[in-house]
Amino acid sequence: MESHIYRQLSQAVLCQIEALHAACMEKVSGPSELGLVLPEADTEEEDSFYALYYIEDTLVSFLSCFCPDGKTAEISGFTAPGFRNRGLFSILLREVKKETKKVFGNVAFLFQCLSSESDTVSFCKSRRLTFSHSECIMEWVPKKESSGRLSSSILSSSDFAPLIRLVPSGEYETFTSLHRRVFEVSPDFSADYIDMVSRDKETTSYLICQNDDTVGLFHLTFSKNSLNPGQAVYLMGFGILPEHRRKGLAKAALKALPSLMPEHSRLFLQVSTLNAAAFSLYENFGFQISSRLDYFS
Image (cartoon, rainbow, N blue to C red; front, side, top):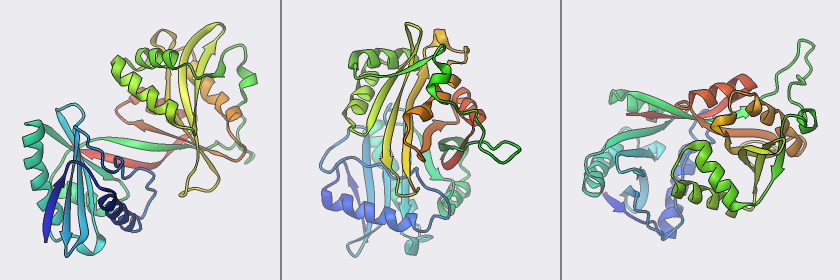
């Protein structure tokens, strides 16, 4: 029995972690669209490291530590179903705390926990951790009228032509500038985010325009989701410039989205409960939580 700390993961170790994750997800009773996020093999990230516990060459427990701002470390992990309640997770947690202090200094900790993963929830509660917030995957569920038919509240873009237009574009500089202004983040963060989006062949970026003005942006990723039948469409980076908010433009853009989607597709997005305005907008529009990742401090 032994534990290891890795700054980067080989392809072989990455495959072991993915296999362990798959085995753990089989035991999850609810939806789990939110889950494991790992880097590419043989790449070292300055803000991340990983702790692994082996028994006779078999990986049975895993923890990841992600500290992007040098102040708060996000901890997530899982233990093989047949090896739980043996203290392995606690052993790795002690190792992670030591490594975190050595690499990042004194930081706060946030523990990620799928709401549908009962063992991890129990662990957080047993440690008397404090609930912080949730990251939610939400799916748009059309509301039904009293007659039982789907509501016509979701209309095509032509119904909002005088109000807004959704314009596909590949203008990198335009999107970088818009992203920075909409989300009030650093130029470097916006450049990295838009660069990542622009390199994804399954993603198309759109400008939200009113008359001759560009008032917002969003991205749509079209992919097959193994957890759900049919075409899955993911809405990302959706936002309106501060000076154009509270004018109904966000709702108009959401109502126009189905005109950009294949027939019978399903619309998903990810939002934090810390972003109360966005969460309320999506919830009132008909989005419902399909998977939730809770954070405990």
